[in-house]
Picture 1 (cartoon, rainbow, N blue to C red):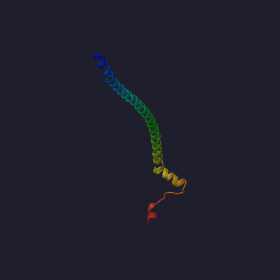
Picture 2 (cartoon, rainbow, N blue to C red; picture 1 turned 90 degrees about the horizontal axis):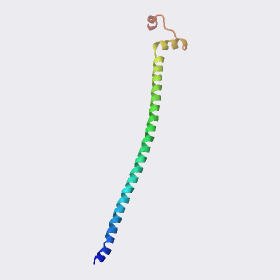
Picture 3 (cartoon, one colour; picture 1 turned 120 degrees about the vertical axis):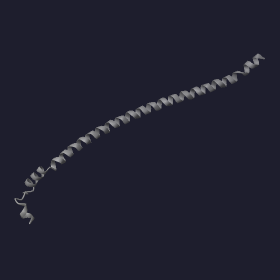
Picture 4 (tube, rainbow, N blue to C red; picture 1 turned 180 degrees about the vertical axis):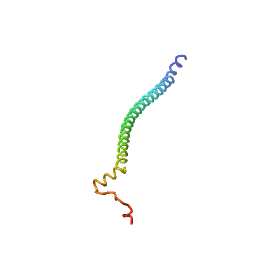
Length: 103
């Protein structure tokens, strides 16, 4: 009788071993998938950081240009510069007496 029991037990043991193998394979698959996703996320992060650096350089360049343009605008808008342009390029002169013009 002991031999009969020994022969009938290997099937349930085989099913348990197959179940553990399936669980192990599933866990291994999840670990590999997780690793691949981590690598993909790290690559995307590096790519985005490179883009951020490029955009920051462009922002710095535009801020420099804006500062230069504001300085130029201030220079061109000064009263002394306006008077020089009016006299040299337009041939205008400031009147001697304002009272005569206003009457």
